[in-house]
Each structure stands twice: as structure tokens, then as C-alpha cells.
Image: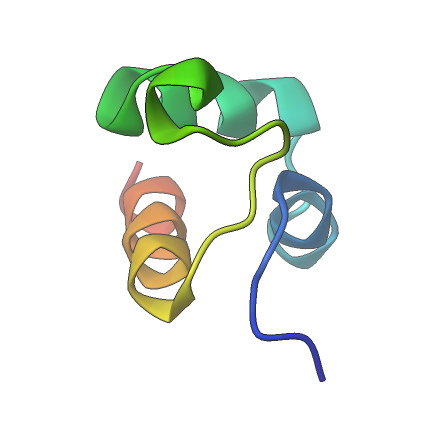
Length: 57
């Protein structure tokens, strides 16, 4: 099992478009460049926060 979750993983799990997830991530955590990353790789806490956001909305 991977140590991170991607927007694609969440998209499949929550049945919502990846773009909607990435938009939320940018709004919540900023641009990838500010995180010194090139791909979204969410840790367990970030993934849980995103799941909560989309399940509540």
C-alpha cells in the first residue's frame, strides 16, 4: 500500500472529477510549486480532510 493518496485515488473513491479535487487542493493548500512538488501526493491527514470536505458538501 502506498504512503500517499492522489487526486485520482480520491476521484475513484468518491466518484467525483479529479479536476474538482485538484481545485479544492489548490484552494486549501496552495499551488504545487509552493509545496516544492510536481504531483499531488496527499498524506493521511490531507486525504482525510479532502474526504470530509467532499462528503459534507
